[in-house]
Length: 409
Picture 1 (tube, rainbow, N blue to C red):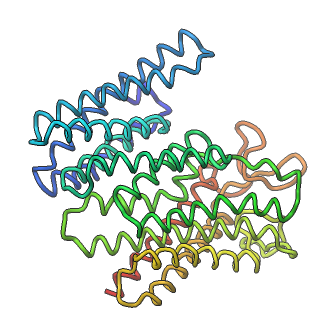
Picture 2 (picture 1 turned 135 degrees about the vertical axis):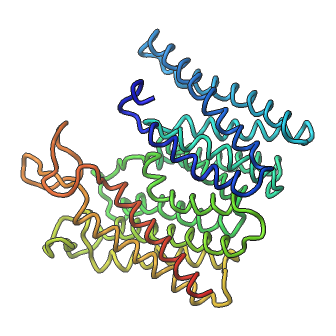
Picture 3 (picture 1 turned 30 degrees about the vertical axis):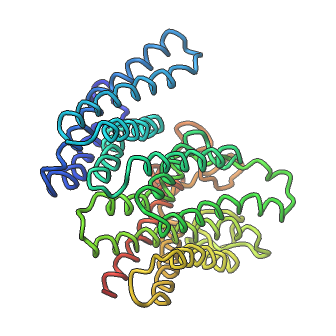
């Protein structure tokens, strides 16, 4: 595998996928082994076949944009056929349930495979298949409900793409996340997720309108990596609940707290970044204490910190109003989520100030992206960009919320 694709992370991603896959199937019940078998049949047969078809097409016509479409259609058809064989041969489901379950899993896995890069489909494809088949097997969700959730997710992703908030692959990723929330979580999970993504997406055009700055009119669309950096921790918490055995209320409560805490941290950082640029006074670098230009990573301002508190509170309030309280003290939970959101934002700022790669431009200014290929950072680590910093903040926010709920219990 590594010899064929030396620049791919697939060699690392494949064994990483086995840990959650085995924990969610073999370690819980032999009845779930069919999901494990189906997931890795898809990875072993459909994934390389799709790659082969796509690469062969692109070699014949380097300018063609049909390679990805042809490869995805190949993956979709093979995945559907393989899962039909697995479900029909191993599980005593009705014909309609077998066909519907295989279809939903095939669509989800195809979307995941299409947006995965550098070998990470070796991790995300089998996990995505498990996240469909296991809840269907446990009757936690029905086939029609799952299909409807996919439709909702497609609508949300389409609107985000049409509004210019996300790239095409970013919209697919966000749509899959939204579909997961609808199918596997319910309103207590959907509402804070929609509040975070809706308000965060609206902040950029609102800021532009407030400043009336024509030069700031073209903000870049967010990519799948940016979506995962902000929502990946929350998504992982939802996956834990979906794959955990029935009757584990403590796991559900802890995972939900981590979900809200991670989103609160992401909201705090986004609100601080977007609204902090409107501050009349320059922000101060956490590294040097000196005034720096607005928007500099690792810098804070009074307005930005206040905006961060409001952002975290929007997610915390949405979670509690949607019936997501996991203790008998909702006011305490609200304070916990706001506090962990600010802790996550603080960690994001510190990582941005001390770990994130910073480059010197020819004019002597600081930049977060390399001014030219092969440039080395003047400070920080080259492997740590803004997305890695955001992931640190959201992970810590979710972790602190989980610890707080466990201590409360």
